[in-house]
Image 1 (cartoon, rainbow, N blue to C red):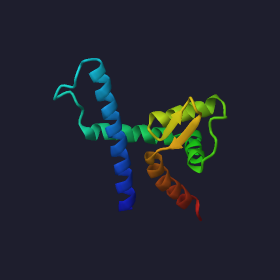
Image 2: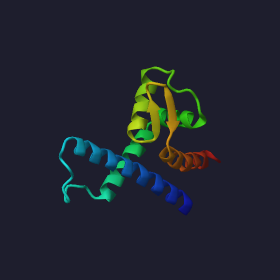
Image 3: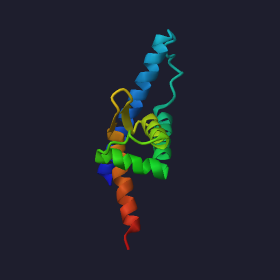
Image 4: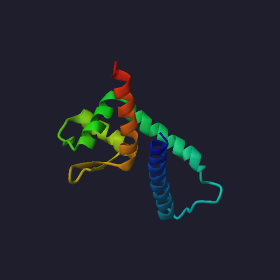
Length: 127
């Protein structure tokens, strides 16, 4: 279980750092650099990211879509429901979705979340 927690923590930390860099770049472009006290504590940011990931995977259709992405299925051929699900997964940092090429790839964060959730689901349904 510790390996799972370590991997999930590392994936969350990586996604969080990516988001913080994106925010810093956007603020630099606006010529308003971060003041020393303006940055939210990283723990609060990590908790917010964790909640966003769990919300995205908490929906039955999104969870199934995440499994299809991990399996390598072509998921951009569906309708509005699939596009909405992909958007939610992408906003949570669980998939990388390139609209131009139509490619969807699972991120390390999705791998780290999906594996223990699927194992728990399998265990719960065994009799």
